[in-house]
Amino acid sequence: MAVILSGKELSEKLTQEQKQRVAELKAQGIHPGLAVVLVGEDPASTIYVRNKGIACETIGIHSETIRLPEDASQEQLEDTIQRLNEDKKISGILVQLPLPKHLDEEAALAKILPEKDVDGFHLMNAGKLFTGQEGVIPCTPKGILYMLKEAGIELKGKEAVIIGRSNIVGKPAAMLLLQEHCTVTICHSRTQNLKEHARRADILVAAIGKPRFVTADMVKPGAAVMDVGINRVDGKVVGDVDYEPVSQVAGYITPVPGGIGKMTISMLMENTLEAACRQGR
Image 1 (cartoon, one colour):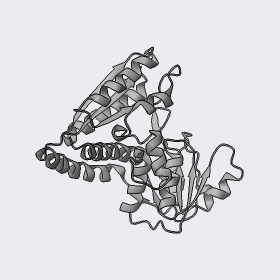
Image 2 (tube, one colour):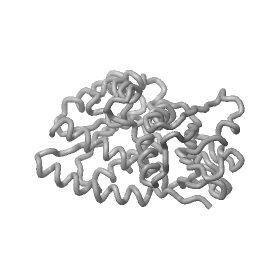
Image 3 (tube, one colour):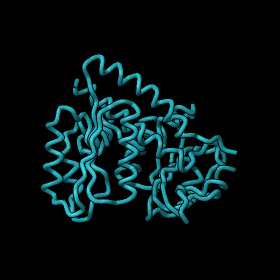
Image 4 (tube, helix red, strand yellow):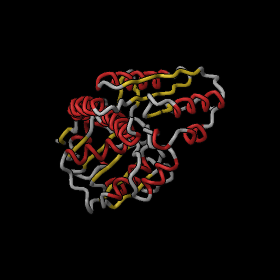
C-alpha cells in the first residue's frame, strides 16, 4: 500500500512558516501583495480565485481580485495589467487562466513585469527555467518537487515520466526534474506504447485532465505517483490516476483532492513572498 503524500498537511505546515515570514518582512518595511485578474464567471476559476484570496488573508498579505466582464477587450485586460505593474502595493500579478477565447493569452502574460509574474509563465521566467537560471518557477511543478523532496524520495538518476506536455505543468516539471538529475520522458496524445513508458517510471507525473486515466497496470511497483488532475465525475472530484488500484502498486501517491492542488496555492504564496523580497517593498 502506497504512502500518501498529503498536500493538505504540507500546506498547513508551510502556512505557519509563511505567516512568520510575513511578520518578519513587514518589520523590515516589506509588504507583499497579490493581485489576481479574473475575466468572466467561469465557476472553476471563480473557486480557485476565492481560494487564493483566502490563502493571502491566512498568511497576512494584501490581496486584490480584479474582475473583468466576459466580453472584456484585449485592451481592457492589458490596461489592467499595466496599472498593476505600476502599483507599489502589488508584488505579484496573476491572470487566472483559461481566458475567454477571444483574448490573446500569450500577449496578456507578456504584459506582466517578469519580477511580478508569480505564475512563472512570462517568457523570461520560462527561459530562465529552461537554462537553469534562477527565476520564478510555475506553482504546480514547484509543488510537485517540494513534495518529492519533503518525502525524502531520491531523484538523482531516477526515471521520471510525465504524461502531459502543457506549458503550465508538463514542460516546466520536466525541466525541474532534469535539473535534479532525473532521466526524463514526456508523454502526450501522440505517444506510442504509453503504458510501456509509464511502467518504467520511478516518478510518474499525471497532468492531462482525463479522469482515472492512469491505471494500476501502467505503474511500476514502488513508484512515486504525482496526480495533478482535477476532474469532476458524478459530482465527485477525482484525479488523472485511478487512485484505489494504483495505491496498491505505487510506493507513494498524492490524493485528489488534498494533494498537489493544495501545494499549488502554497507555492503561489511562496512566489509572492519571494517577489516582494526581490522588489524590496
